[in-house]
Image (tube, rainbow, N blue to C red; front, side):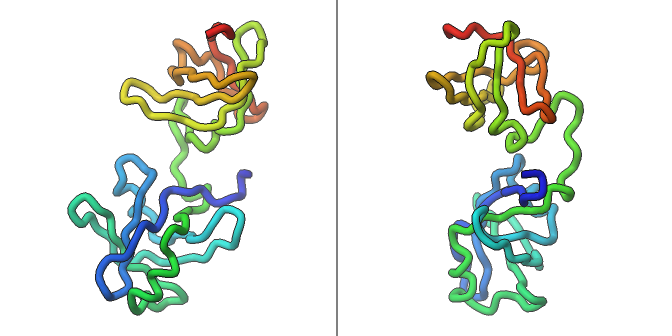
Length: 172
C-alpha cells in the first residue's frame, strides 16, 4: 500500500486540438495538483506511465494541462483522448508530511474503528466532506457515519496498528 501511487485526480476530457487535456483534481484547493511537475497516469490495477506537466492553468472553472510523454508534448486530440478517464497520481514521497492530528484520507480508508470500550464500529470505506467537518463512512454490521473531529470524537489514530479509537456509541 505505501509504495502504491497516490491518486490526486483524473483526466476528464479534451481541451482544444493541440493535445491539451482537462483534469479534475481531488486536491483542495484544486490547483494544488499543479504543484507536481510529473504525473503518473493510469489505473490502480494497471501500469502507471509518467507524464511531464509542460503547462497547466485554470480555464474558467476547469483545469487544463499540456503533457509530455517521452520528452515530447502530446501532439493532438487523438493522443490526448487515450488518457480520458485515467487517474492522475504521484509517488507518496512527493506529498508533504501532514501536520500533527492531520491525516490524508487515503491513509484512513481501510482502518478499523472501535469505540473506547473496544467495540468494533466498522472499517473506514470512504470519507465524506460536509462543510462543518469530515466524516468517516464505516462499513460493519451496518453503515455508520462518524464525524472525524480529532480530540472531540476521535481519540486516537494509529496508522501502524490500522486502528482508530472513537468516542462513539455503537447503537448510534
